[in-house]
Each structure stands twice: as structure tokens, then as C-alpha cells.
Image (cartoon, rainbow, N blue to C red):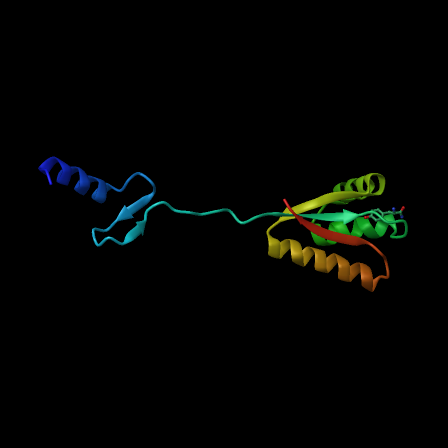
Length: 120
Ligand code: TYC
């Protein structure tokens, strides 16, 4: 092996190959590039139906999504006219909790209001 070849190999080994991997000279790969994927987000949707009172939906949106009365009324009307609307975007756990809270609250009041989540 030539000296030039040796020098190049050592340089490559010590500096890595610019592929995000290092080498600690033991031959064991060392992660140098942080691989941080952001967790997926989930849309929480409210669906229209013919029976749930408008005021009940407005109350649900204020209570569980922290919306003002005006914002809640606007979203309720969108659902009423278009069939559904996104009421918020959350992590999986938060979205799941909101859906469960709304479904439980609607059921306890004997309204058929539906709330679901969908990956963004
Ligand atoms: N369509 C219902 C009515 O006329 C009102 C309503 C709005 C129901 C939004 C559900 O998610 C909903 N009483």
C-alpha cells in the first residue's frame, strides 16, 4: 500500500464519508447526525347531524377546545352547512383525549354528535 493511499484511507476513516456517520476508530459506527422526526399531528373533526342542538355544539367547542363563543359559533355553522370541520390539530394523545371527551359528553346528553380524528 502506498503512503498516499494510507493517508487517504485514514482521512476518510477519521472524518467520515460525509454521510452523517462518524467512526471512533474501533470500526463501530457512531451517529453524528441527529435524526429527530417531528411526531405526526392529528386533525380533530366534528361531524354534522340532524338532531344535536346548535347550542350544544357551541358549548362543546367552547368547553373542550377553548374557543371563544364567536369562534365556536362560526365553526358550528360551518359544520352545519358543510357537513364537517376541523376544530383543532393536536398530537395523537391530545387528539384522542379530545375525541373521547366529546363523544362521552354527547352520549351522556343523549345527542348523536360525532367527533373523529385523522392524521394530518
Ligand atoms: N345540524 C344541527 C341542527 O340543525 C346542528 C349541528 C351542528 C349538529 C354541528 C352537529 O356538529 C354539528 N340542529
